[in-house]
Amino acid sequence: MDTTGKSLRSMVEKWLAPDPQTAIRVIQFRRMCSNQRRYVHVEVLRTAGAVGIFFFRHDDGTWCVFPQDTVRPAMNVCERAA
Image (cartoon, rainbow, N blue to C red; front, side, top):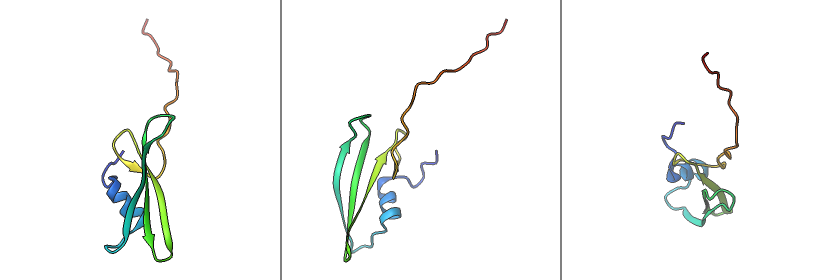
């Protein structure tokens, strides 16, 4: 996965496009109960009202607007040489 530009700051700038005068607030910083992965709820205050979005931290250290897929058990077939 390309991790360039996947810091929390770059994701906030990409999705919420704040300008220098815009107030940005971290509303929540927690872990999900199911898998202990982190998420952050960030809010931008605009004249029309507040706009918020959740960002989820993936195992490779990047932040995304969607949670990481859960690893599910899988079976593989292995051929043995005779």
